[in-house]
Each structure stands twice: as C-alpha cells, then as structure tokens.
Length: 93
Image (tube, rainbow, N blue to C red; front, side, top):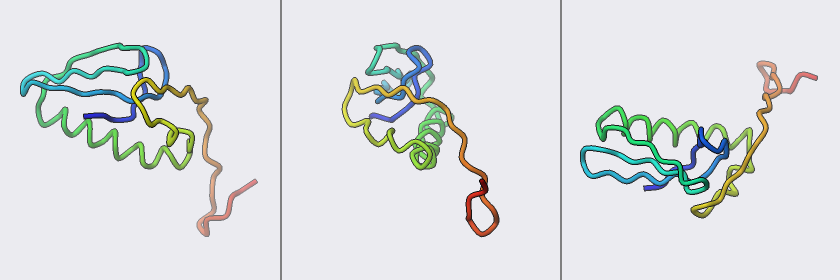
C-alpha cells in the first residue's frame, strides 16, 4: 500500500510504502528509505485513513503535492498560511 506523507527523517513529502504481516506495519519513505514500525491494528489503519483524508485538504493549499507520482519522488515545500476569508468566501487583503 502507498500513501503520500511527510517524512520526519528527510523532511520531504513523498510516497510512503506500508507493508504489514498482520501484526506489524512497516512504513518506508521511498525518498530516503527511513523505516519505522507500528502495530497493525485499528489505530494504525485509522491513522492511514486520516493521512489520506488530510492530504485531500492539504493539496488545495499545496497543489505541488499532486506531482508526487512514483516511488522515490520527493517534494520539499515551505509552509504558507491560507489567506483568511470572509463569510462570503472573499479573500481579505
């Protein structure tokens, strides 16, 4: 299984590979090859769903995340805040 995620080791958004044996899930950054293990349980599966859900929102702010297509791709982005909007959806300047 693959997800787009921010690697805390190399600080790049990348494709993360997740493999599991039914007991342990191994998350591997395909950019720097950093790995970490989590128990394969309901909380870990919920975490994966949460990452995928938050990425949908994040790509609106950072459309360059859509460029992550293949294992090994990595994007380093600078944090930027969204411009505040009024209740009618008009940007404040």
